[in-house]
Image (cartoon, rainbow, N blue to C red):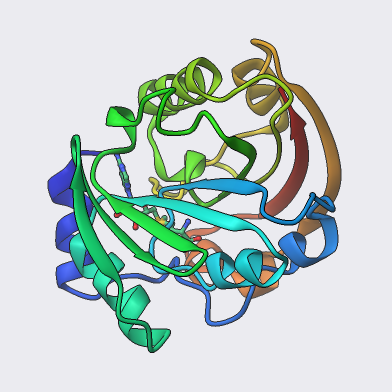
Length: 215
Ligand SMILES: C[S@@+](CC[C@H](N)C(=O)[O-])C[C@H]1O[C@@H](n2cnc3c(N)ncnc32)[C@H](O)[C@@H]1O
């Protein structure tokens, strides 16, 4: 998925992936972390999950390509962010919330050296196969050992519908994250009754899974 694709989605407000409520798996399965822990949220959009994480006492580092998304996030939260340039990113911050606007793949180990947690909802599954392999490799290369996290995925018959969101079956999740991560599935639900376009396309199941991660 090239940058233009996502910029256009945001420009046209085609953001069906955005959730109007905090993700329930996050609320159910997020680990208790020491106050002030820094959490990396790649491909964060304008997710309310960022706000929930900050409400748990975390410092949040979201990374998002589309400036429209970043600006909408702070505006909708009634926050006036400070904006500074840092390397390849425009870094927006307000209190415990930081969103770096730029390409996730430009993030360095220095940038995330103090991150002890990772939250991925609709990030890995937003990427086609070659890119999601690169995505996981990049996270593994830059995040410090001991990092914990939560990953939320979708698994459906990819032949009935093209992504994004892409189907990433359990076996692929385990293969992708096998390079140093401990992967534990904590929940799996068939959400086909919530997935209008999947039903119309003829999908027979739409499994949403949550995994706890540890590097
Ligand atoms: C499917 S959306 C998910 C957003 C968010 N995680 C959520 O749950 O609402 C994927 C997001 O990733 C952003 N994105 C795509 N490629 C990116 C990249 N290389 N670097 C940073 N953000 C990216 C898109 O602009 C889009 O907002």
